[in-house]
Length: 255
Ligand code: ADP
Ligand code: TYD
Image (tube, rainbow, N blue to C red; front, side):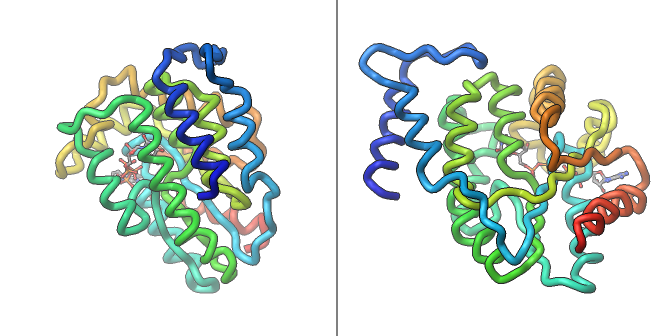
């Protein structure tokens, strides 16, 4: 991180002490110029999207929609002809695993901004140490969640201010950008039923009220309204058909 970035980050945290509640409006507090700070993030290392030899595919959706299942199945299929890196956020690196153990643990109280910044730290490290190197080698990188999860969960779910989330997200990605985003969509009740059946301990988000998850799903819909790299897959289908739909999209891109 260079000096400008450190200044910008610490500046953002100072701004973070004041109340910025409205997700549509940014209130610039006295003594701090939020515009300038966000500009610094926007310009730093961004967003000249590079054409890497490899491609990045992100899988997004609410908890229990079937993302991890799809990611694993896609890896099995695609590795017949390509080198595939299957990874995830949070927790795609040893450092990220430590962060994940905090973000998933509902017994550790987390302020909204701290929660987002943990996901951002996980992402920054993940992009620099796993995703970009794999793309440079020409791999197909499949990531189970990425930036859109922060906008949907922290932005729409928690109602954390979206402008800094978007700016920091761009900054963590730098020249990397998903070529294809697969949005695995299921109604809330289907997701809840699947999560309930899953025997493991419930995470922070899986114990949230239904309204939270509804806001997250609505958030995905809102951010995907204007994106042309996003393909919605009907996650209520049999696994075989979910995978088939995803492969059709990927093959359309020449892979
Ligand atoms: P996510 O990663 O989105 O939380 P998972 O892939 O872990 O979701 O799936 C949640 C549960 O639902 C798992 O028990 C999985 O076996 C099951 N599942 C996944 N996809 C389907 C599907 N298309 N139909 C029925 N069950 C599914
Ligand atoms: P994950 O194992 O991906 O959830 P699931 O398999 O149940 O879909 O767990 C990650 C959790 O972290 C998930 O509940 C969503 C949340 N999350 C955020 O809130 N923000 C983020 O930026 C990311 C990447 C994940």
